[in-house]
Image (tube, rainbow, N blue to C red):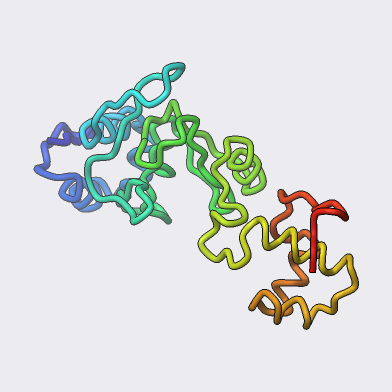
Length: 201
């Protein structure tokens, strides 16, 4: 059960602790955890299970309570602007994550709330790390993919051969904008080109 470090009162739940902090100390939970980072670390450990995910890292603290559909911890801290557990976990280091920043997992394990595995960084750094570690949904793996890698290569080859965008879209059953994006390499950028002797129309 969580103890208030200001007056040593024990509350049956963290929600009860938040109410006690507000009523007795006129303090929001966010300010409390910033003042006592170890209290946040204790909360994280109490609601997590240790799991070894990466050999070179300390064990993950996998959140055992409420999670989002994509596996991230959901945790409420009164006074905080978010209830994403991996963002709030950095309170255990005395850090409040700015809204425009992301929190990246060194372990690539979404339910992990071990502060030692987390760092805040820019959206660009998040994308770069995702690509570097092969976690991006590219080409046929993307949930909105229509062509697949081979289809994208054919679309580019047909454009190079002089087919109009409309002809290409009708041949493949995709929109004109899809053709434009593929030809301009805004999508399927990882796919190479067909050589002249590889495509037949």
